[in-house]
Image (tube, rainbow, N blue to C red; front, top):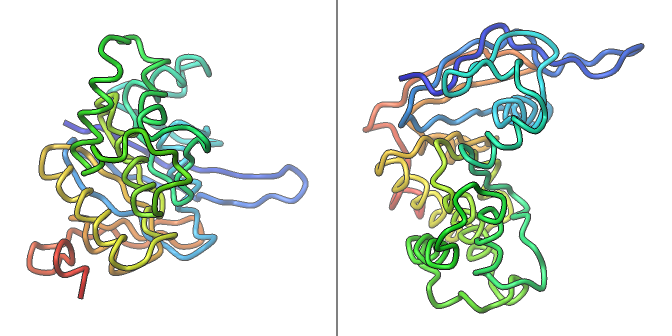
Length: 237
């Protein structure tokens, strides 16, 4: 089943002086795929991610998410769909400071329809990313790699249909970055749909498919064979 379908997606910023951030993107992403959207700075990849993640609206074109035409949804409906179906992992972590690891992960559950067993659910996902020993630590007391693992746990706690990872290794050293990519690979092997936004070739090649974008246009869409993927232990070399 296609989780995402976009057709001739465009995004224009400005009125008098127009900037074409996206110029007619069309593709489909199936449930369970691990896709990297790759391009240099200013290519339009972050704009595309914001639209796919329902954080922004396209100027024109069609977008169906989970078989819903999102152009027909109002802001409140989009916010509800984001909270229930989408998890985000950002380069800058976006964690609440002076708040414990556990409370950071519980936060999305406050806005969820299902508010039962919030603490138990948060502890379970923190355990899955190897942070059971950090539950009561404040986020300013843990390393960058651990912060990103908290962000992944927070993205997972609502059991989303898809996880968007925007430059998740950008602020990390190579060892911590490799650990984050291993976690994303493991999540995908368990059936989670992953969309990774990156400018780094070696990070993108952990995915099973790479959508290359340049100057707002998709210039290549390639599948990566298993023997050409660079992930897990290979990332540490």
